[in-house]
Length: 114
Length: 111
Image 1 (tube, each protein chain N blue to C red):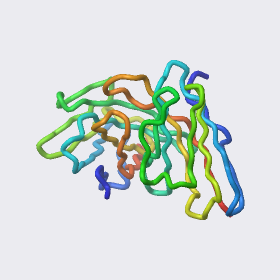
Image 2: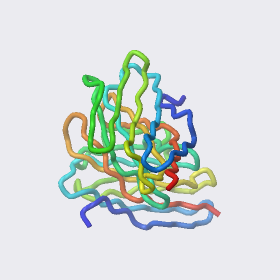
Image 3: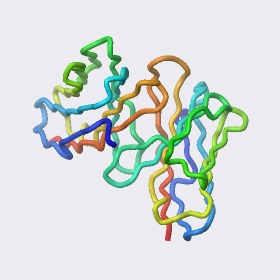
Image 4: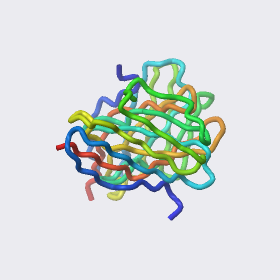
């Protein structure tokens, strides 16, 4: 399977705990994106990387959220001190560099906060 | 502030007929538009896109139309098939990086 891979698929945790998600993009894609999707909404942009550089962050990405892409390949998204409102589907996407390139999504990590 | 809007939460169409899904946007700087299809428990799958220099793009049974003056795009599926039943999201971008998504339209194709 050469698509975008996300791990884990589901994560259940107690409020206040830290969680980390992993995304492996399509291998030839230099750009990597994180989105969040809640029930009845479309995906909302969180942040994006060009290789290892984090180039853009949404105001949705509070200081409890941090994303890394240390070697320009896989990426991690960490949420510290989770809150009920963090319950959502976290989607990763990747694309080639260039103008008007579609983003290709993984199947997401569903986070549930107890 | 929803910059991309899909005002029809659901649509039902008979198999073999045309499905038309609509999307409106408010930001005149958007210059790249896409449609994604999503099945339950899967991520969105890219379907078709159009840049603002065109008003139509076709790929097999799928055609996207863009009306810049009306800030409106639509996706036509002809003929509709039961396997097309899914949630369809439109998305728009002006930087090529951050995509703004609508809230989705659930399409049901009735055999």
